[in-house]
Image (cartoon, rainbow, N blue to C red; front, side, top):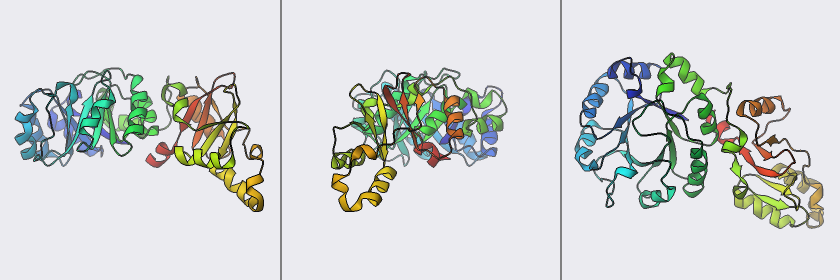
Length: 333
């Protein structure tokens, strides 16, 4: 996951000093909030003189067109327009030579992205008030990220507001492309804070139920009520490499993964149609409870004797609640 450092969050240094420090630690880009202030482009000019950092501009304006020429002249690499401030007839400018995206507040539906999906390269989820540093991350954003990923799998996701090391770990696990970091990055030594954002040794109050895939998002089949072909079709449909097997009361029976199917094919190749599917089920999979915290999950995974890419999430009475996937985190690391 890339880190975009919010330059105006550092109150203890000048803009150019902050930019040079960010560049020194190989942070990916520089986030600049422009809350309808032309003077921001004077800062951008100075930053461009002093560093080679890419500019990630967040434009909050009811009249964005007055900035187009300045964006083009400054050769800004990416511009995100705040949706709630845009006029109804807004369309992306065709001649500013930059990547463009849409930012939305928590109360705004992801449906608004439909209108811009052909041109926009990304969405920016604002979990706090734009331009205000030091806010608290809103957990509701986790569900919006999942919804957006399902609707627009090819679009990149950015998150801004209250992101710290605890939130960063979850966002990486969810496949977020870039996190905008403000006060957390500058409250301690810049390099140390950056390493914490990239690290896995964390203590977090967030639990599995905060960011797991929900039941309606995962492949569930009911024991004794599916064929071998239906099993294959379900795994193919969800593209997760597994199916969760439930009893009639929504209690976890076990898992069937691609690896389980491969072993069954090898063993029963000559008569696979008549193979008893119940024999394929892994009835003792690794699982976590819905209220297990992130650090509890990490310790549990580290103590397993085998690598995992997913964990079913259950309640104390073994009811299926959801699924944690680790493929995005593994790819990111």
